[in-house]
Length: 285
Ligand SMILES: Nc1ncnc2c1ncn2[C@@H]1O[C@H](COP(=O)(O)OP(=O)(O)OP(=O)(O)O)[C@@H](O)[C@H]1O
Ligand SMILES: [Mg+2]
Image (spheres, rainbow, N blue to C red):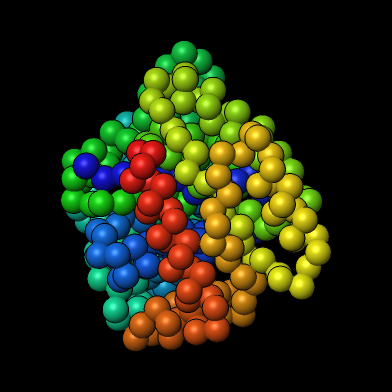
């Protein structure tokens, strides 16, 4: 049975998608894990990172994205979601990465959110509108060791579908004032949601991203987070701000992860991060 981890933060642009993609690639290439990536963000960033924009257009035309799944849930007369066709196998553009699959997102997911919200509003006690993803993926869960769900920067119906499916979550954050604002509130919301749906969602850790060693603010913010009793775990591997990590968003072929992420610290930090997340997930989930 796979362990399912959601990547969340209400703040945009803090490295959620970049961290999720790197975790999947390192889990597969360096730790031999079978990984499924699920892109729940209508911005489709994870999808285009993993398969490129051209392939995304094809998938979207064919209806092989998660938009079809959620559209069907909102409008049952619509086309069926074909999980086997939607499932994109071995997607990473890095040759040494084998065994990362993807369920693609679509810009059309933007419209679907509203339909799901209406369903929830009409029947506030029902958990059906947040169980669409969990129900759909159930048949393939056993094919993976880890399923990573990249969520949009909000707690809307798509993110709630991701959290309902998740056993645990990570919160990537830049160690500055605005990015860390509201993290305890986010944790509380997740806890309340877990109670409501009757499924535990454990906090795996806060992941420090875009860390600048020369910044006093970054260092003091990390110290503050480490002292905060409401935060169970600040993952000890901090991800540096680096051009090569930013460039990882581009869909181009690489031979190895060292080539992709660069050898001046980024590779080691991302590998350590993956090791920490795997260790915590094995203990907690
Ligand atoms: N460690 C890093 N060093 C340099 N740039 C980074 C790093 N991590 C992410 N970036 C860049 O920062 C931007 C935001 O990253 P990313 O898209 O991963 O954030 P996000 O939290 O998923 O954003 P959103 O909330 O819009 O989904 C991107 O341009 C990305 O390439
Ligand atoms: Mg993102």
